[in-house]
Image 1 (tube, rainbow, N blue to C red):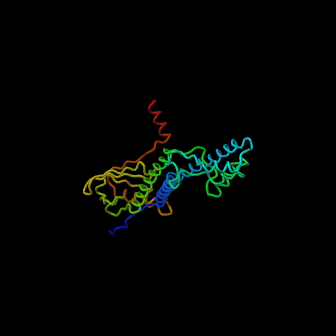
Image 2: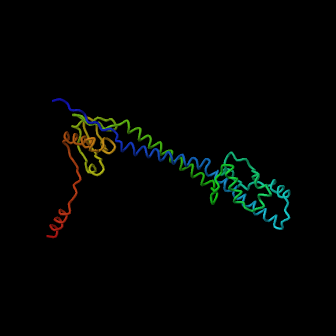
Image 3: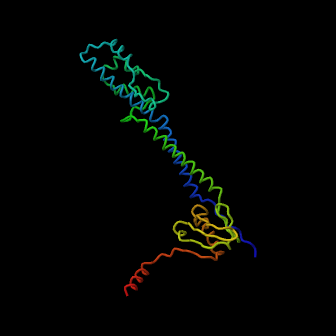
Length: 274
C-alpha cells in the first residue's frame, strides 16, 4: 500500500500576527519609557522651572517698580545677577544643562517686562527656543524618573521574550505521516507508543494532549491547533486534518468533553427525586 503524503502544520498567520503585535507594542513602550527616563522628564522639569522663573521675575519687577521709580539700568543690573532657581538635585535635569543658568535675556529687557505680561513673554521665549509652552503642573522627582527606566527595562525584556518565542515558533511545525507524529519540539513518536489522547480542550481552545510511552520514550505531546495549522476552512482546516490523521492511527484511551444537555439534567433530577 503506497504511503500517503505527510500532513505538516506550520505556524499560522494568526499566531504570527499576534506575536508580532506584542513585539511591536512592547518595543514602542520600551522606547517611550526610555525617552521619558533619559530626556523627556528632565526636559519637562527644565520647562517647569523656567516657567516659574518668568512668573517670579514678573512678580519681582512689579514689586521693585511699585512706586514707578525703577529705571531700566537698575532692572538690568538686578536681572544680570539672577539665575534660574533649579533644584539642587541635578539628576532630574537635562545632562546638557549648564548650571547656574542666568535668567533668559528677555527677562533683562525693561520695556518688555514693564507690561507685566509674563505669559506672553514665556510663549515667545518657548517658540524661539523650541520648548513646550505648557509645562507640567508639578516637577518629576528622581523616583519618577527611575520608574521610567525600570518599566522601560521590563518592556525591553518582554520584547526579547516575545521575539524569542516568535522566532522559535517560526522554525517549528507539527507533522504526521503513516507511522508517527513529530511534535513541535522535533521529537518523533510512533503511533504504537501513543497511550492517551486528551481532547477536552480541542473544540473550545484548539488544544490536545497525547501521553506516550514505549520505544519513543515517555512523555506528553502538546498540540496547539491555533498556533500550528489553524482551522480556516479555506485552507482545508490543517489542524483538524492533522487530528483526524492521529485519531485514525490511534488505539489508546481517548478523553473527550461531553457536555450535559438541559433535558438530560432534568431527567437526572427527576430520576433522583423518584
